[in-house]
Image (tube, rainbow, N blue to C red; front, top):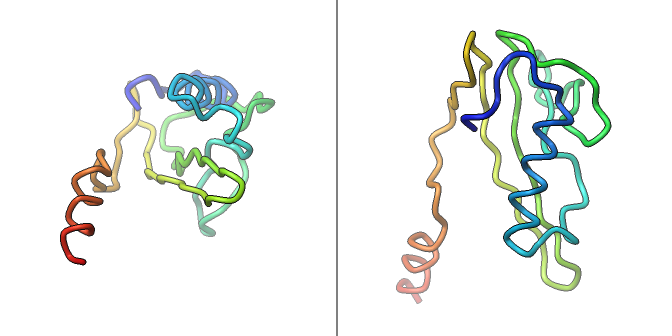
Length: 110
């Protein structure tokens, strides 16, 4: 999230998210936008998508949530909430960044 800052277009954020997913080998399964604004409602415009010319400004709040959906298997979406400050973005969610340790814990329960 270090690259998100005031002055970027939302389409640029979407592009970075898509590249990460593409580089991981799941580009064909990224069929949704990369996120959306949060305001009085949880899902609000503006949307972080490939064609958005909206400029990111200080104090905007977003959910960054790229998703991968594989037919016949299912989907995964990780969501981080960020607040845009003068020089970047503060991530205000506290989720694990690696899923493997959690999966190992679940496997050990059975």
